[in-house]
Length: 59
Length: 271
Image 1 (cartoon, rainbow over the protein chains, first blue to last red):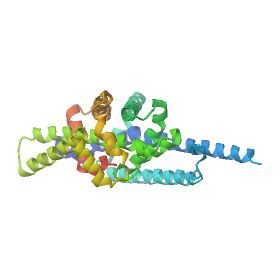
Image 2 (cartoon, chains in turn orange, cyan; image 1 turned 90 degrees about the vertical axis):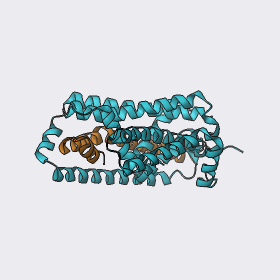
Image 3 (cartoon, chains in turn blue, cyan; image 1 turned 135 degrees about the horizontal axis):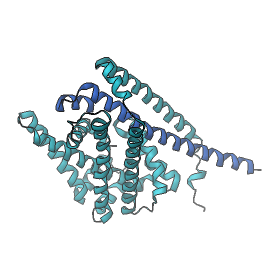
Image 4 (tube, rainbow over the protein chains, first blue to last red; image 1 turned 90 degrees about the horizontal axis):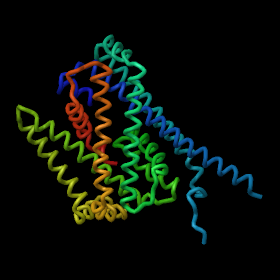
C-alpha cells in the first residue's frame, strides 16, 4: 500500500518505492520477527529446562 | 495456601504448541514476503529494481538496523512508562522481551492481533495478570492512532484541489481523532466505550484509562510515541533519499504516505 501511495501521490518511480518497501521489510520487519521468535523459543527452552529439572528431583 | 507461581503453572506443556504456532506464522510470513517480492519484480522494471537492491552498502545496513533497534528501544521505554503510570511495577529489562515477542507476533497476524500476546508473555515473566497490563496496550494503540491521523490530516489539508472525497476523508479523520482524544482524556467516555465494547471482559481497562491521563508518565509516553514513529518514517526516508538516491522525497511526504497506508487499514492499529 505504501509503495503504491508513494508512486501515485509523490511520483516516486515504482522501482524505487518497491525497493524501499523490500529493504524496509528486510531490515525493519524481519530483524524484529527473528528477535521475537528467538526470545519466545528461549523462554520455552528455559521452561522446558525447569520442568525437566523438576522431574529429576521428583521421587 | 501458597500462591501458584507462573513457572509451575499446569498450562506449561501447551506452550511448546504455541511455539510451533509462532514458527508456522513466521514461515507463512516468509512465503508471503517472497510472493510480494516476486510480484514486485513482475510488475516493475525488474532490471532497475535489481540494481536498486544491489546498491545497498554495508554501512546502509548498519544504519537501518540501528534505526530499527532504536525504534524498538523507544517502544520498550514507552510501554514501561505506561505500565508504571498504571500502577504496574515494571523494569525495562522485564518488559523488553515480551514487547519484542508481541511486536513480532503483531507483524505476522491480521489486524496486529498478535500484540495482545505481549501481556501474556509479560505475565510469564512477572506473574502480573494481563488484566492489569492490557489497558496500557489500548492506550498505546490510541496514541499511535492519534499520531497517524495527525499525519494523514496534514496530507489532506495540503491537497490543493479540494474535492468531495478529500473533504469527506478529512471529516472522517477529524471525527476519529476527536473520538480517540475523548476516550483518552474524558473518563466517562472511556468507561462507556470500554464497558460497551468489551462487556467487562477486561474490567481493569476502563479503570486504568480513566485516571492515567493525570500522570506525567502518560504525557511523556505520548511524546515518545512521536519519536517512535519519527524513527520508523525516518528509516523509510533514509532508504529512499540516501540508499536508493531519490533526492526529491521529503520526510513529511514519507510520514503522510506511511500514515495514509496504515489509516487506510485502520483496523491494523487496533489490537
